[in-house]
Length: 255
Image 1: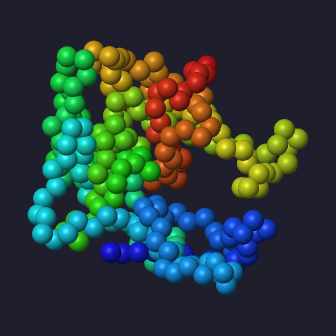
Image 2: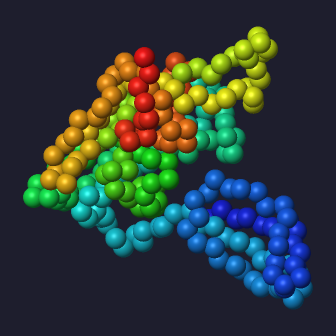
């Protein structure tokens, strides 16, 4: 099993006999389990940690069949070069949020209605950043997640072509102010992250208790204000910032 290893650079023991640590940095690795290799609290040291990144499916299993409303997605290989051909270091490679559907469950029932899947085998999709369970199957990385965690269908390499699913909304983020009211030029670090943008596309709407689609209250072309920390952010090929979020995170229409 592939494993990422984190090692504490220093450790001290507090007055209560509990360890405290300095020198640890946040990691982007999704933690499945911590396995201490040895214990030596009496010597005031901290054991090495092994972070397991994904569940490995044993070779004796030849297929995975998702249940209910779950979907199995083969994760797209991360880009290892920039658009200009520059090789990226491992630390700069962005974890992909896209892949191809390879299997779907039998669906779910809401009220008295059986809800058909919005995706099928072979569909290329974009999903929420922290969704699902990662699997290594037949030597390839997969993700097992609920259909509701799929943001939309994307048949091209440009996020502005995304077709949102369910109650998702795709918004082109407004550009941040370049100067202050007094005319001073703002640095990148001091620019306030905007929470305003233009709706590019909307999904078919959420399901009510009877399994009927409810229309979304915003339309393409609307200028909207949305929750500051909602959704999943993407960069388009044109360099513009986009965000895909749930319609419930849209707070107002501006005019």
